[in-house]
Amino acid sequence: MIVLGVAMLALGVGFLLVAAIGLVRLPDPFQRMHSATKAGTLGTSLIVLGVLLLDQTARLSTGLLTILFLLLTLPIGAQLLGRAAYLSGARMEGVDDDPLADVLDRAEAKPTDRPD
Image (cartoon, rainbow, N blue to C red):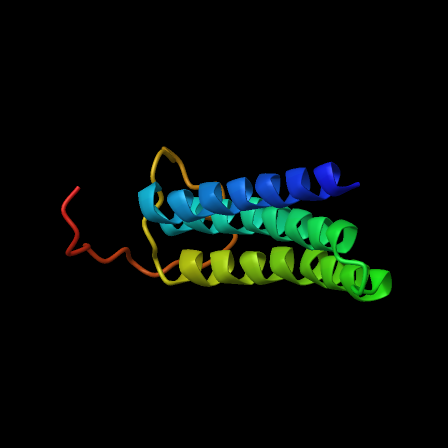
C-alpha cells in the first residue's frame, strides 16, 4: 500500500511538472490552457489519491469529493477561459482556417510585444 501511494504521488508530481512546463513553453493561450487543465487535473487527482493511500487519518469521502470537484469544475473553467481568449482575439498557432469564424464574433488580434 505504501509503494502504491508513493508511486501515485510521484506520478502526480510528474504530471504537474509537465503542466508547468507546458504553461511556460507552449506558444498560445489555448495550448497553455489545455496543458494546465489536462495534466493539472490528472496530477492533482493522483496526488490526492496518493495521500489517501498513505495517510491513515485522511477521510476517503473528503478525498473523493475533492477529486470529483476538480473533475467537474476545471474543464468548465477551461472552456470559459478558452472562449474568452478566442473572443478577445488571442492568437492561434498552427491553425490555417478558423472553424468558428462563422459562428462567433471575434475581436481583431493585437500584435504581441513578445518576440517569436
